[in-house]
Image: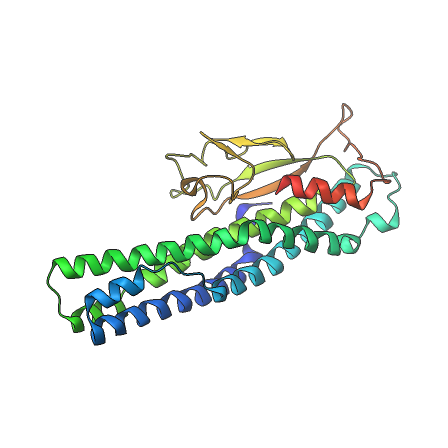
Length: 283
């Protein structure tokens, strides 16, 4: 399956998240702009520099994750099961392993746990960058001697909310897609491998952490890629920002084959709790 086919189902969720994040950032810019116009630069700078945690930012991100992760977990499970069955004709697969429904609660539980662990950090990073953008603009405006009305116009017309929202939506959606792929793959009754797939175009990341060099790399599901630092999957929250921001890469799941080129079964008696531990370790 090509990169384009892998990524296409996530595009509507990415666009929706981008619009919501842009609206949230624009609102912050408007508030600071009005303070700058009505009360002056010093008040605006003091307000913009305050630490903030906006719960409104977490809601659209968590909604996107729930939708995208669950979709890709189910899709990965269904497509992989069908493909692997074709490679093992004549091998009986118990009925309850043919559907991913038995894993819905496990996947949601794992995702909720993951969001509790990383979600606040995602939001804090977004808000911290917005704060820095505002303070940088206000500093430049002060140095250039802009009037309060000019500062207001500069903030209101700024393209930063749009460009930042696009970057955030792309980063978070890529992260969600690959988290879902991992959940689906880890729940299969077969041992699996993961392959790093890029868009194979001129904007694939080269430095400082090359994704171009990772393209086509195949490793065990629980192993770690390395392109100058360890990264478990595209969008890995444990990797540095330079390695994940604006990333478009995807994972492709492949069966781990035995000497006869047949998928290696994990066993049908695997307990759901064991799968939950495996999912948690992967993310």
